[in-house]
Image (cartoon, helix red, strand yellow):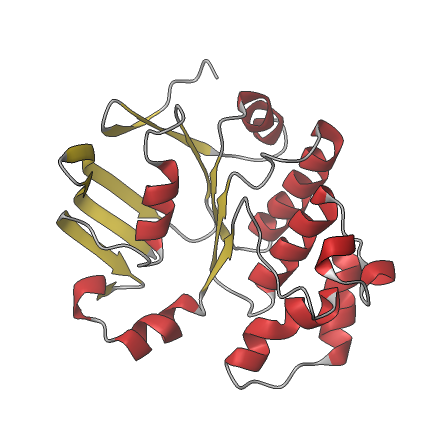
Length: 223
């Protein structure tokens, strides 16, 4: 689905990481951990072609990212849902309108039934008409997750989605991600929160990758 083959990335003269190998498979749940500044966000961006590697290759669903046109990249991204830590919304639109926005941008009809079910699933039915500035941190993250899955993607990429919310809300968000994984979605979640990873291990089968010292490696079982 998403393959990084011997990938390296630099910021100016600084080599952030090199020789990175990542193969995101259908139905798998991956955690990406490592110290701040190691390059977790950069690696996530490489996975949906928001950045291009300095060395190596990135392939999405069997197609080389280097060979895709801008329109082809946009179409391919419809199969990938992304949840950012600093989830951004259009503040003049309601929560429901923000969640439905990916479909609108893609020129696809919005099913009010499907939208209502999605709002209910993330526990935001009563906040559907609210504007983003009125939401709590946890509500914003759940809205961001709903928006990410609105297009029924094959893969969910989540970059520190629990970084700005409390433990109770983190567990709630994790439960939603585990449910998506059980539905067959591949999940790649970047986090520095080892307690969250341990909690996930008690709920489902996970693979933990650690990015540190410029290398991406399988983490040990002592997390």
